[in-house]
Amino acid sequence: MTKKLYYESAYIREWETRITRKLEREDGIFLVMEETAFYPHGGGQPCDLGWIDKIPVLDVVHEEGEILHKVERFPEKEEVRCLLDWGRRFDHMQHHSGQHLLSAMCLEVCQAETLSFHLGQDYATIDIARSDLPQDQLMMLELKVNDQIYLNRKVTNYFVSREQVAVLPLVKQPKVTDDIRIVEIEGVEYNACGGTHVSATGEIGMIKLLRAEKQKGHLRIYFKCGHRALKEFNTGLEILSKLSARFNTAKEEILDRIAKWDEEQKQLQVELNAVKTENDSYLAGKLLAKRQGSLIKHAFADKPLKDMQNLAANLTDQADVSVLFVSNKGNKVLLAQGGESELACGAFFKQHLADYRGKGGGSDKMAQAGFATEEDAMAFYHFTAESLKTLEEK
Image 1 (cartoon, rainbow, N blue to C red):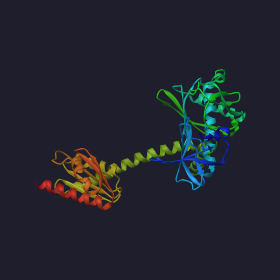
Image 2: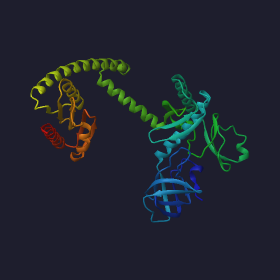
Image 3: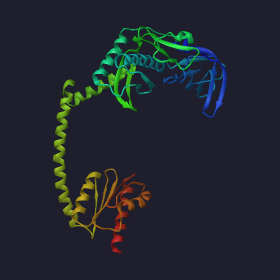
Image 4: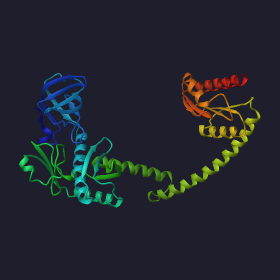
């Protein structure tokens, strides 16, 4: 059985030990060592990573009392030196201890029990037994949990028997009955937990609540602790500073400036749409005048797909014509039909697009597609024009 150094101290970063077993399996190669400080997956906490004789540790799992270390290759020697990825470990310690503290405050402030905990690469979450949480309570919760950090309460862990655990005021009764590990935050809570933790709440640094959202009848709270919380603040401040420079205004006035800018953009869009409508009417008249039979076709240099759709609708509303457009902007081709026609646009595209490396579709009356290259788009455009011409001559 592997000796678990992370239960002796969460602060062990380097150690020397001996390999007791080597395993080759379909999912990789693994080492079992006499002792390890690499924490395996469990309890909502991801595993530790690091190096064994400078060989990267890819995964750590717990199987039947042994800790299996997945590695890139087997070390050459049986006696090895291990090094923990301390940044990852301390991040996990900050967040796991932060979760315990946050859950305790949820119980005190919101009378809500924690149902689950997840520690991801981007953020951590807890699900609590509440269907909602007003913003003022969320802010109060954040203040309360950070107050406990500033008090720098001692965090200890120890093993107890079934008899001893029976007299402890645990938040939840443990599922295990032997070797029950207790994590105690002085003056706050006792919790049965097998994870790695800081030695005092001050080491959590800070807890920032990001948002709360409903999740299957409960409430999920997103949060970050310590270094992640500091990075979140710095990222937000950088964005705020760039917006302040962009709008040439103080940070406190950015929201008002953006609101004003939004109104200006809406007005400009109204004016632009009016100009586009007038331009489309003029262009539609020119295209109708030079149509070849019932086909109107045109190649645009940079007309967006949406504008081509609007123009095509304008033309098919005015006359019983087929409209074929191509644009170099995104390599788009559009086909529209006015009145009755033997050719269904969507079905035609579906039948032939693959031959030109195109993707798209549509209805009987209008279809559109995008192509990998300008050459493919033009080739499909010319093919479609010839197909329509042939169909009209029949």
